[in-house]
Length: 189
Image (tube, rainbow, N blue to C red):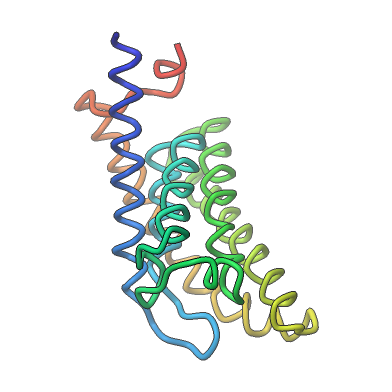
């Protein structure tokens, strides 16, 4: 019974992070093709706080909400046209980013230093997946795709990686202390 209650708590947290991602997606700086939004900060927070499995589940929920038509993506957009359009690679990349970021933290330690490393790697995963789809959908050369889809986001991405690490590690520690978040090995038992 305890394990089932804990899994339910984790799924509720996943749902909350899907909602947080939807809200932060609306915080943006518009650019011509790919806007800078708060989505990636939310992805980093989900992975840092929830870990790999549940961070990825929260992003699957987020992508699913947008796929079925709820306007959760940047600029209140939704649907398969967004997912398979120029910016869809970033959105699909959120799932892998959460998985990779959380995995690095679980295999090392939930510290600010490791959080920064993990979230920076996660940023690279998001930018890589986004740039690949941008190149394919818009038939860009690699240099054009990188110039539009990756380079403009590196500095802001590093700032978001730091914020996700700092806020995420702090919140995670407090949730564990309050017994609202169990360590991964406790949940899997």
